[in-house]
Amino acid sequence: MAGLQYLSGFGNEFTSEDPRCPGCLPKGQNSPQQCPYGLYAEQLSGAAFTAPRKENQRSWLYRIRPSVLHQPFTVEEKGLLTHDWNSVQPNPNQLRWKPFNIPNVDEEKVDFVQGLATICGAGDPKARHGLAIYIYTCNIPMGEKCFYSSDGDFLIVPQQRGLFITTEFGRMQVDPNEICVIQRGIRFNISVDGPSRGYVLEVFDGHFELPNLGPIGANGLANPKDFLTPCAWYEDRDVTGYTVISKYHGHLFSCKQNHSPFDVVGWHGNYAPYKYDLSKFMVINCVAFDHADPSIFTVLTCPSLRAGTAIADFVIFPPRWSVQEKTFRPPYYHRNCMSEFMGLIKGTYEAKEGGFQPGGGSLHSIMTPHGPDAECFEKASKAELKPEKIAVGTMAFMFESSLSMAVTEWANTSSIDPDYYQCWQPLKKHFDPNWKPTGILSHTICENMAM
Image 1 (spheres, rainbow, N blue to C red):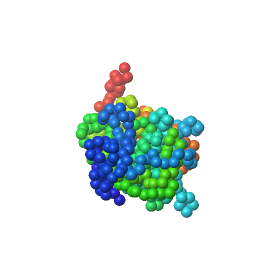
Image 2 (cartoon, helix red, strand yellow):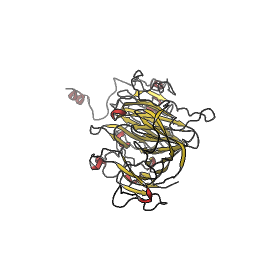
Image 3 (tube, helix red, strand yellow):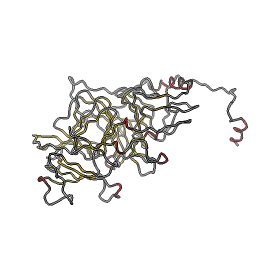
Image 4 (tube, rainbow, N blue to C red):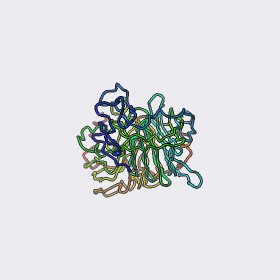
């Protein structure tokens, strides 16, 4: 396997050459009349040519054959992939899914693309606005196929078994508790060595970036130096009928070509796939009382045109110390102007110790109330408040969006937990009108506050 390199400075330009062809990158200009080694120069643009320099994303690829060398596209069966948000009745209920089923390889052979199923989403890729959330379940490698999305960037979260991903920029292994981002237009192939499952967030708008740190300062959360991108690696291989699959306007199309698409000998730029190990996240948390907002756990964000409001945030809840005094420590009951899809990579989520399982998920839509189940509330309300390490052996995450997401017909019936609402039904009334305050807040102060 080819190596990985640091994405130095996250988004800054850098270069990579396959060591088998030293000097393959042209010197002094991007597209000379004749490229070294008889290569073709090809630019892959992730932003408008005239985007501000700090936002402009593009890479130059020096390849054996240009990617235009293929037969015409034809319609491909898209299975459970859909962006039709209007054919299903809206559902404002709290939703939870049991672990999504992985097909038995003896009964059905399914690769990564065939195993993509849409859970929920919003917007329209034709308008370059919105997002979609998928589950993938697969059991065989893609073989002589590659895939790319013309609609948006893929953020892939493996849950069961790792993925060996070959891209035009090189190769990388992405294991559970790691993530990778493969941007719009980049071709890739995924191999697996057994039954595999995970989550995908696709954004149709811009690209993922690191959140601003604000008062946190220069250090904390995800560190730019911990992001890795592949080193250049090529294969010069003739193939009879290699299949290229394109996701375009939410549909799949395929074409044939007679060579491997992974023939990039060298590249330079700032538009490239990358991976990140979630264990490297530097947690920021409360050390006195109450809660900070869960935005302090944001790894990556895709911002909207409204300041501080995301098309999508990728948020994690890693192992950490809980030390707040006089505080109900689990997540508080909540209604939110954002949509919150949660998944579990491993372990047991502290606010839902039963029912919420690795490989499953939950969706709490805009303004739908949610929070810890009854058992968690009763236990945490009486717990001794000493410093405690929580979420040990656990990694839960959230795809959060300012958009109101619709759930697909398949997701409304597949693996759905019809009894999810029951986890809150045992909550008791603890109200006592005769309770006397013992703190500084007196009845006189309350009366003055009400005036």
